[in-house]
Length: 499
Ligand code: HEM
Image (cartoon, rainbow, N blue to C red; front, side, top):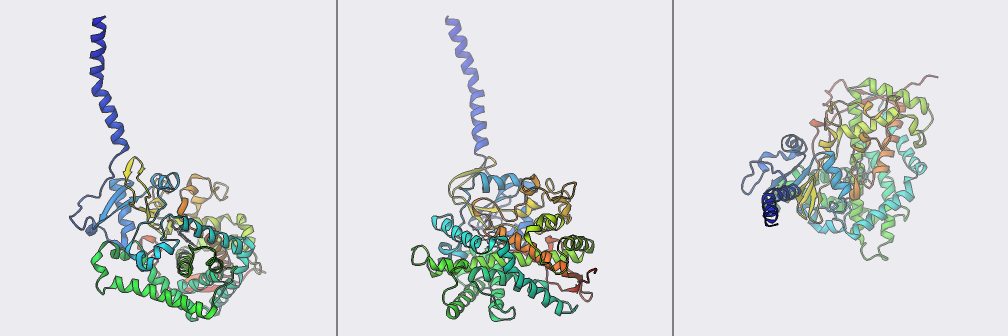
């Protein structure tokens, strides 16, 4: 008996080191510390290693060396960057409630914009309410397919006419697309259309450029991480002030001219709630107007511009799209969303365009609302999180030869478009995912389709021989909130259809 007791005791004692190391291993696995980008300097952190204007490219390179989840330090701010599907999906979808915040930033503190905005507000009851209001009015007003077609048709007729009247002279496509997409958006938002050569569209174009430069993850970020910049007169501070002043002037002029907007429009609907809901005031309506104009115009107009740039280098692709489009929408038949399934190649081109250019490369910064774990790494509450959609969309494990523009990635062997549940489609997250997913996803996809089909149905785009066409490879684009290709000109030839 005594011997048995001694043997049991010895057995237990000998197990202790094994048990202790098992507990330690499990614990340390669960609470692994996020890899830091090495060579952090005192005070500046990794700032010298990070070229701000190309930070999406640098992050992607770092992810190959340090793993899909890492932390970078810019002065006082620590940013966790998520670079692959597993980490991004875990944060945005599986732990969506925890990662739905927005970080506090000096740039969005101005005039307390972060309390009024959809894009910059953290995850509050008010944000949820504003998202619902916008979603409901977009749906009621125009997301019905026929209504969207009705709204786009006059704009597209006018766009194609404007281009045809140029009679083969070269023009800047980004400008002319901005006008038309802008007018569709203005109609949704305030129920008005404006003369493309008039002051309103001109102001919106200027405002869009300023906001793109000011609020992107690139250069504009300096104002958040280098606090001393806020006190002097420098490029960044002046640009932020000008951006907000231009925006205020536009809003005041519209208010003076039109008062409140049609209740059927998104912002008019919001204005009608001002007396009912103490959370909504005129500043909230103005801020949401700004958010939606900026998020809804530049993104789509730039995608169209990039497509034209890609087609200039790839005339076979253009011809194949035109043949498909004309087979379903012959001359005189306005393209219709109900026939989208009959144009799988065009659909695949649009999906590949959104993957290839990934023109909102780092989404909008997120933040954690509580302590969290991603891929086994501990992340503190209130951490800033960058979602590197650029890295996800150019990940060779998902997209072999990622720098090749290949619509075939989204087609099956029979030439049909892959189902939205196909692993490839699920890994294309151009609009983000989860609680902060882009509010305009359906609108953007449907509108892009109508613009692409209406343009190629009647026009062929060819290079302007007098100027070199810039590289369509998105690695050469300029970073703001949205990536933009270098400016270029194009010629359009009116298509002559077979009788
Ligand atoms: C090709 C076109 C577009 C692309 C690629 C795009 C992409 C994105 C992305 C990546 C985000 C950030 C998601 C995140 O924070 O994780 C976003 C947010 C947003 N987008 Fe879009 N977008 C497009 C068009 C539009 C349009 C047409 C609208 C107008 C209704 C719109 C309104 C918004 C808004 C309001 C947000 C902020 C949502 C929030 O913070 O809760 N976007 N978009």
